[in-house]
Length: 183
Image 1 (tube, rainbow, N blue to C red):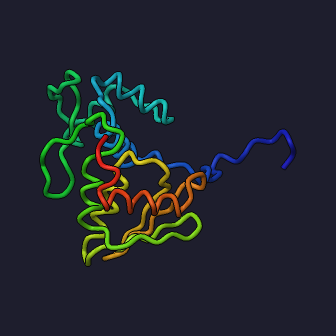
Image 2 (image 1 turned 60 degrees about the horizontal axis):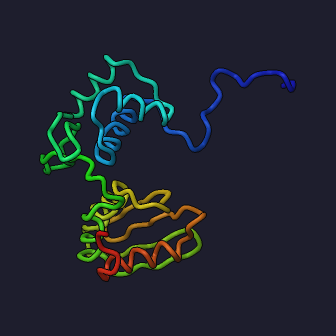
């Protein structure tokens, strides 16, 4: 291929991109609503656009209906909220906190141990609790986390390379000890 040639149409997307499927788009909408105060469809469309996702108003309206989003009154005014996961049907919305109060509480209750190696942290939990804890970590606004993988009683947390596993493990242990609560 010459210098001036363009990439083939069916070229693979970059390794760090997400697919632009309906499911991926709707998950981004849920994430935005639970992490930020979203006041309008225009606000939501602008937030999606900053993530490289362009949608029409009709598509956005359908997506909001399909994820069960509703407008509620809050201290921040009228904002969108979505139902919780699983059996939790309570409405979830952004609280404006930089880190949920839920994650430190769950770490206090569920974290048995934390060990780090390079950019990875292994969290041990009681049997059956790892996926619940991993989901809470994924949904938190905690920085320095690239991703999680959970089994039955073990969560593998991959740290952002700028943070490193040791610092992240220490943060999890401090939350579990009640040292970094809300604030």
